[in-house]
Image (tube, rainbow, N blue to C red):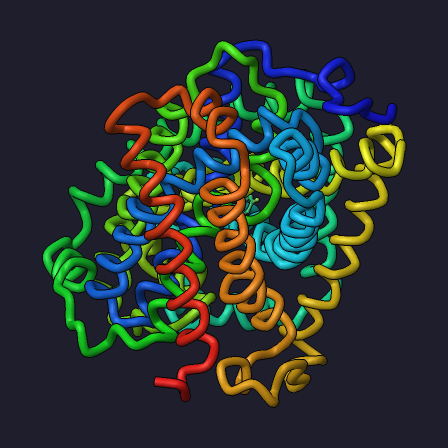
Length: 476
Ligand code: PFF
């Protein structure tokens, strides 16, 4: 099925506005909120990082969410072709489609390591599931988790997992398999259904666990850590990391929002939806911080532990908490749901491109990109193990210490996403037809002027500065 000019007739659509909102919020809320945000806030000193992050969300992320969705809806095709269609309608060079290409590439790369981390989640869900059902049969389901296991041994489970290549591969395979299955079923029966069931379940679980944490956890230290800014920690690379995280978390710069935007009806008002995505996403990130750091401090762990923070610290805490194995199981199910609704949005971008640009069937396109990202994931997971010493970008100071996993993660977040965000802002703000843009946003008067100011000036200048000084801190 090759899209005709504009492709409108061949595009599938959401069955309702609710379905679109749930799918878009599902794309945004994911490992980025529950795993990457606490990890980066911890590594980069807490308060100042969090404040700068929120600034990026409001001033750069929010206006760009609207920009990406509107390109999708106006272009009505995959990420690359949608930009091309809008460029053509605006009478500017179709070469702008290049940032659509960057976005599809970014989605492909992100999904590679994303699925590996989601595999860790599955492993821990399995650990706590087995523990809970074991306890259930022995008649004590509400005791702590992993009774009798030394805290060091619980923390050591992460290292054990990293040492076990077949297990890492098995978990990664299961997660990619489920993602593939959802995408192969299509927009209605796959993406929409997944979001319709998983997102409400996610929010219920989040609420339950946060309330539980409020009763059994120690909040004050976490609140101080997350909200007391020490601006001396806010270096240019830290700002770059915060910006990259804001983009990553809101699924910007990686084809998802443009692709989902193409399935939105002309009647849907886009601006309130963009606001809901930004609000839900940032709210969940902050709540996740408030869920995780009280526990991190309570068990005396280093908040700057890095990517293993969530996986090593929380299981130790669950051991000491009432109904720990059940809460642990629910917690990892929660992360799994969040990860799945995001991974399907990551796969949909490239898949939609394969369908439109290459003329492939959905099944073929989903298969090709699933296998591609799956293989990239295997390379990433081997760098947790036998390839741990490989330094792909060792010559570049900000990546000097990074293994392959960290390079794929860091390069997308620090380079690819900001570059796409910059080009999106310039394209929508300066090159796309102003009337077309105004109609798509549905904004009027002062609101449109404010949004336009952010897209034309603040977003591009802010992103450009952060990008240049973040990548080349020596320039400062
Ligand atoms: N926003 C997702 C998260 O926070 O986990 C990750 C993501 C999904 C990034 C979709 C990019 C994307 F296109």
